[in-house]
Image (cartoon, rainbow, N blue to C red):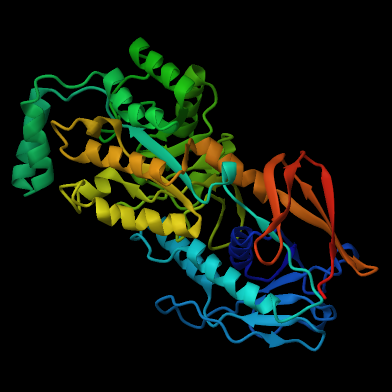
Length: 496
């Protein structure tokens, strides 16, 4: 059940291989090329990320080796495998003919440079690898290959996280909308021209509490909860201009904190100025308690420096990796994952909750009619559901006013109804990330074969609920909870 990832000079590949291992459902540990230590001598899985075969020290026991050599060049991704080959020690090696680890790193690095949404989805690659492992396992009869089934909460196949950025809570003045309309005319920006024109003649703009109700009502009706990221305010012209010290805004934030999650919406400049981010964090914490999640305004990131600043404040996760135009996953993985420097491999101490789609990325740049574009959205979300990933969407409450932004609210309700029809949980960002964090903290401490049985012992850094241990056919033979820092052991009869 445990997977060893060989330590190499290319530390980012080791971190990326760890994400692949967790998605496969196999807790992993990072080891050296000297071979496994005594307590992990019979470790059943091995992932090899270098060119050539593993050294002899790793091939003295039967085990399944998944070899993923780095590709010489990057081509349009098509996952392939060589036929499973037996090893002299009685194990088996499964070689990938392409490099999903390198592909993920390429997508991750492109996401930092504001690259386009990727067609690559690591969860789909994991499904293909899992199927090939199953075929390979059935060719040998003396090695146990249990798999840790990492279902989402309540045994759901996939997860949904509905989020929003509170960029405005009041209507702009008539002169302000007139200036926006004139800019749209001169710049030939059809979207802004039409939106400003509608806003100018909108007599009754929804009150702030009505905007929150529009966002929450479909969720509440379907038993879900959402996350709203609130801006603290700044002098930059592109920042939200409401005053977080206003008693009415304070009441709105406190009310939302009771029914959902309050996150921080870092200002335009805070991505590059740690002091500004710290002050905004402290102001929001005084109102709602310490926020756990953050999304930077305008999706701005200054490389990994922004994440390091966020982590130093004690924030648990970031949700800034989001397509600016179109729809898709910018980093190639939809499931929350621990952030690391994709160029040096350093741990950053914070998690990422990737976003599949943002309302403005579609109706502002791609599709004026979001109801008409719903099949396009549905195609992508079903793809993530089939792969068992996490669907995170971003809708701004201020654009749910159909008088100014036609079809946006209808598309929002259609998505919520679709999630409910698929039987998926709609959880907040912190609940989603916490669920993955607990599963991520399970590590192997013993893997030994004695007297015809395989002994496996695990330890969990955090309490884990609803853990399911499966055999190679995916059938669960143990389920239950593991307490924090508690060791748990299993014995398996060897096949045959």
